[in-house]
Every structure is written in structure tokens, then in C-alpha cells.
Image 1 (spheres, rainbow, N blue to C red):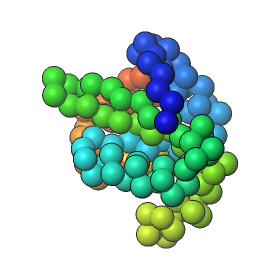
Image 2: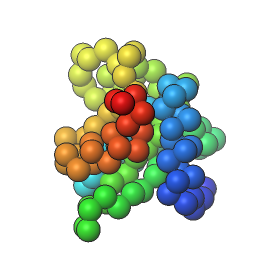
Image 3: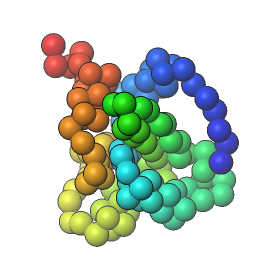
Image 4: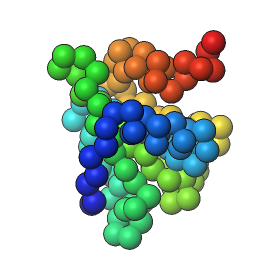
Amino acid sequence: MKTTLLEQQEAIAMMQRKINARTHWFIVGASPMGAEMMRCIEEKFYDGEAGVDFEIYMQPIESRQLIAIAMANKCRMSPEQLAKYLKVTHDFRDRDVILTPDVPVSVLEWMTENFYSDSLN
């Protein structure tokens, strides 16, 4: 996996472009359980050359809270494949953000502030 360090504002701008384009799944996790889910998705759908379509952004939220946001290009994992992998019957065609069960409210507040604040005003 290639590693690139970005300044926070640069990373947020890059994620905002992907959110606006609706070309990626955003998988948000805040614990080892979330990290394991991301690792498994990367291994199953984005292994080898497909890895260029899977990126992870790490962000400290609170004094000791670190979140990971995996950006997975939808061209490699369809809504049906995602639902089957998660073992749910949910229709993901109109969804872009998947939260692991461990995501605290502070993460949702950070995401709203950084990605959706313009649409709320």
C-alpha cells in the first residue's frame, strides 16, 4: 500500500471532491473493530492492483480519539456486494457513508462540520 501524507485541509478537500462525485464508499471506524472491517474489505475487494482504489485517512477527533475513514471506489465493490459482505438486506444504492457500530457522536459532529455544513445552512 502506498502511503501519502496530506495536510488536513488538503485531505478534507480531496474527500469533499469524492463525496460530491459519489464515486466512493466512505467507511468510518473508530476502534480496532472498525479497522478490521476496513482491512477485510480492502483484502477482499481491493487486493493487488485494485489497491489504488482504496485509501485510508486517519484523523484525531478528541484528545484520545482517532478515526479512520476508508475511501473505497464503488467501481470495485457494488452496492449488492457491499450488502452481501455486511450480511444485510439494506439497499446501498443511495448511500455513500457506512459507519461501523463503534463510531461516537463526536465523529459524526466532525464529519458534519467538515463535509456537510454548507448543505445545512
